[in-house]
Image 1: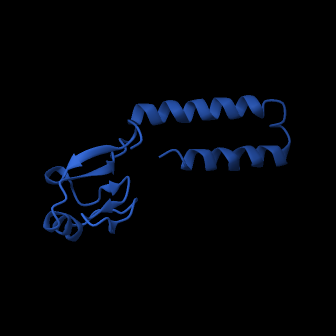
Image 2 (image 1 turned 45 degrees about the vertical axis):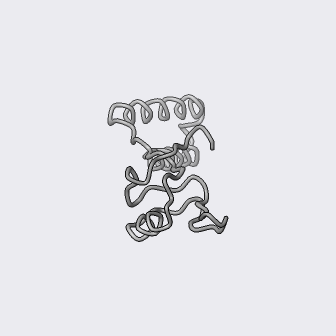
Length: 108
């Protein structure tokens, strides 16, 4: 088990949760592989086979709007610093704009 996963009892599992490691039945056969997004059918199968708990990846909490705004400001300031001496050149200005747009779109 790694630090970013947690063991949850079957009653606490919800469809959509991701398995952090494979689930094996009592004979050692793999029922579900790591990374599987649980469905209602998976939960029913786990219950039928007597699986009491599984290791899941905790849900990622999205950053707040304030955090995103701060990250955007920091990215733009850093990039302006990097391009500070070359923004007068059209090719560098275009590169700056494309790179900034790419970095901003990948924030959330």
